[in-house]
Image (tube, rainbow, N blue to C red; front, side, top):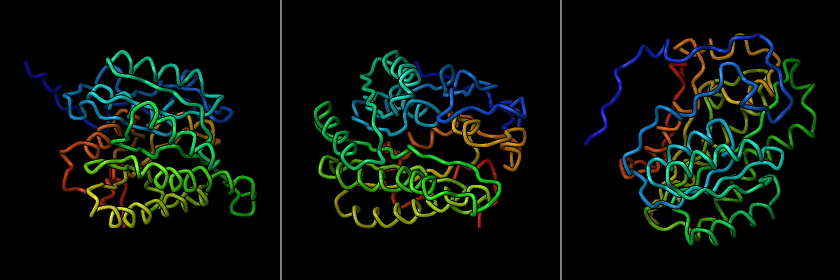
Length: 296
């Protein structure tokens, strides 16, 4: 029996905007303390075996977009190994629960992808667990808003952002490539910030622009090997990173065309599409899911 699609909803009213001006948290943030609580698709995502028996790796899968992608992949039939920081163990347990409830294997690995040797350990663990990697999702990222401009961006902050957002992605693509078979897929997470950088997120936006270039260049390199490389460029998404790195969430998402931030579960479908055979002729593409934010 085919599952029935829910009735169409007004996208401007589908999810509420953040309720309070001050939801500030210490990084990396806590899903349980957010209002409204992010929707990862727990009650709404319905799978149909588009990723049956795929072996997948997701960085930053403990919360936010990463958790939503892990849930969606599992409900589409994939096993999931995902990374999280050691201090995010509680969040990671919830992602594991969602994946195993979908009947798939979940492996949570504490891992700091800013460290090359940690990326090597992640690669070795993925191969030991799965034997191959059908889909690699480079999703882990870090940002820290600096409303006072470039003068307030310390070298320590800059290093953390560049190493998390770029070095880790580069190392993992290079290390996992020998274990990605023809027909496999790499999906990177960029951002609307790559096109419309916010002044207070200058260093973060810079890395997201680099991810666009890296995605397109690597796709051209790997196309002859039958490996597709694409990226998703979300607009504002309501994840723990937002209250943990932004001083005021009262207007967060209002700049999107739909007038609200996306929920993580709304992003997951883009990753499923790019990972599946539905996108078998799609490579070197940036799937913009910006909620109507104008792009150049």
